[in-house]
Length: 446
Image (cartoon, rainbow, N blue to C red):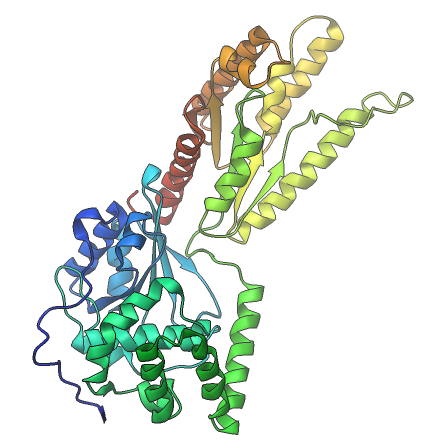
């Protein structure tokens, strides 16, 4: 077996061993692949082409792209609803995300250089050769020998172990890898010497998966001192950059989204679920003026309770704005605007209180999006039996009027979500409404 910079395909292998399941792949993946093909850029699928990944809603798909086509590919993906995340300390990685409602997220992890290591510290020059040898239609994939070495090096250098899901692919690709030249760049850039590359082939042949960690250690020790120092320095730099910078949408400031609803609609459960599903940094703030465990006001100072609440909510407002400016999605549990629901006419003191609350409604900063979770009072009563159904229905109508008033005044975008659906459907609907605003702000088509 010899290393050959002008690698040729194996003569008796005319078809790729792995083909992307186009008919069953998620809509976002199909749309993104079609956009890259129309843009006539050079690209191929690195990982994510197995049926399991496609069936799970395309959580993440790894794509190799020619460096000179980077801008054209980014523009093509933005035109079909993808938003690029700004990242640091991740080598040439760029992440493009798209939300397809109930179908979930589609994430394209695009690289223009094939790097290895946990912190992308081991660079290689494999990209040009892989793109020159890729095949397949309509989704190009690496040639079988490239596919073997990409997966093997990922297991050895990135993970230090061979995951169970990767073992069948390595075994199936092994005969091609043994009978073909090692692609240029694997030795000496990715693997320090040929003996280690041969050792990888022997491990796969014997299915001695536990020995992969030993190869990873030997690969690190067999490099020269200066090269080891360079890799450690590069790893430390990338690690520090990742720790300082959380991914956020490129060319877009973060959004402040307020969720309001009567008790029992599921706000407190929904907000953490949306945060866990969101593809970049997010946080939440409680913005209600009437917390369940508010401290009693000082009797010697009338109005002190409201002052404390305003200070608390004002501090949360300033903190949320700071996080939004850094690019985060900020979810607001309730909003000070809902005080108008409790401002009823009556005595002179009550009318003064109502006037103050209406002034707060007119002057308090608006969120970017107001989401109203809507459900009948009878449904909310079943979720919160200790609350009266008629009172919940009255609160529901109050929130509906509030949403109408906000929309009519043009204070912010408003959307109503049917909270009687199943929890996954409600979460998908909330995420879709937020993503629609993100797409509009980023200038992409939702």
